[in-house]
Length: 439
Ligand code: SF4
Ligand code: SF4
Image 1 (cartoon, helix red, strand yellow):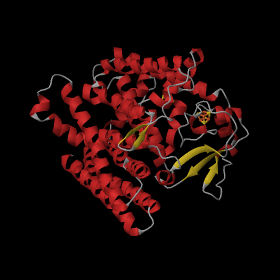
Image 2 (cartoon, protein in one colour):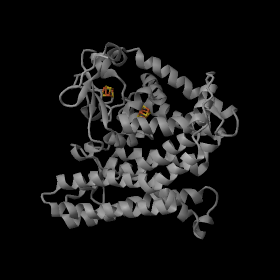
Image 3 (cartoon, protein in one colour):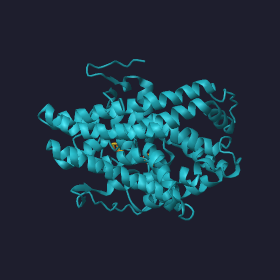
Image 4 (spheres, helix red, strand yellow):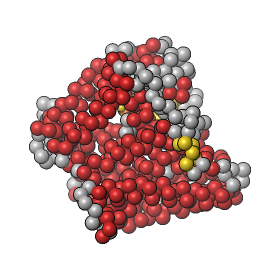
């Protein structure tokens, strides 16, 4: 490879001719998307007609054991929004919007709603769609009932097609996709960013924040218009301290902080609080799905209210400006949710049955594969011990270090920084202690 590391710690990956071809040839992404769209529909079909056991059903394995957990989470955490390049829904959106009405999506970013002094925009819709998309997986049982998978994906597909037939510029990807808000948050945690070296002058396909260059860090949907229309422009792989983007963010959005809190609520908090709420006599007496749904909503509401109360204390005590500090401290909580999901679902799942999942997926595509189902039970149980005693506390250390950086950059003395920091790190630690106890 003829790539070189530049003095600023980045690598110009397009110095390699093959990589430049991948980024700048306009047929590469459509070809990749033909494959991903094909697998998407095939997986829905196989989910419907395949075995009822989710661990042997191609569709269930493809969607929940491989796509949503390892592939999405690992790619988001290490390379920001790179998944959008491959995404079948994004490809369908780009295709269908050609035949649509091309209206402007109702934008409320200039007429924001103020809730408790915080400017909320249409981007908060992505926190709602993420919570809505996550709800059926375990509360209704879609993740372990393959026959329900078509009823899960086809409405999401219908909304994606419907929105793109009415609105222009990948409105579904910007405002509705359940993953888009999460990706905008996790992109700030990734140690790597893929980006063009400067603005290209190509009008962004989404007009998102006037972003005129490919970036896995911004709200770019990796449509590759920037690179295919300016093939002479270099693309870099940049290295950075994971989470530094939260500290240096020039346009902090309260909506993204809300998404970060919802991630924390849905993963670790709901496992503790949701289960406790669901076991109360009052909630257990509710009919049908109202029991898990109420517990789920309580977890989300309690997390946001709890954080807001802690931050009220921290900002009053340290004299911090409310809105910007709410946003940056809220984003600092993102590692707590992401690390929980990475440890419990991705690493735990791969150790326990990663080989079996790959076998089912490969065999379903006609490729013979016979990996061991997973590692030994002793390794799985060692991981579970480490998960509770070390991993979750590493998450607190990561979130705490981001919060400390935010505190020191937003204050003019160590004393004020400590006053902003201590309530948050105490809250993070107390909640994590409860999660560990319940694990
Ligand atoms: S924003 Fe969502 S739908 Fe659009 S390309 Fe990215 S993951 Fe896919
Ligand atoms: S910044 Fe470039 S690659 Fe990203 S969405 Fe806009 S046009 Fe597409």
